[in-house]
Image (cartoon, rainbow, N blue to C red; front, side, top):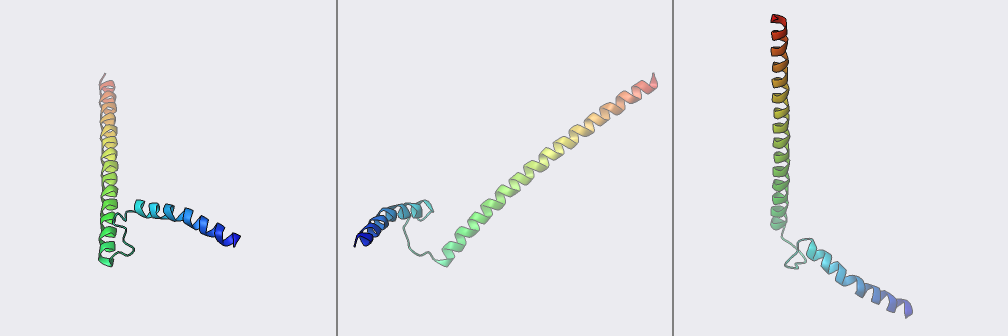
Length: 89
């Protein structure tokens, strides 16, 4: 009896935390089951958001690379101009 009482007490304590974790997982309407179409819609939305973030990151990285390449080309042009001026003198 003592073990059963302790177990029921522990289960009762753990139960509210499980419900809170379900709420934080995105089940605002507390449904036990969700439709497959709804799950697929959520999955697609998450996928699109992830792909958009990756594309933005890729675009930013490409812009940074292009900026570095332009700066390097400009510095190379300045060095070449200085070299020509020194050669003329």
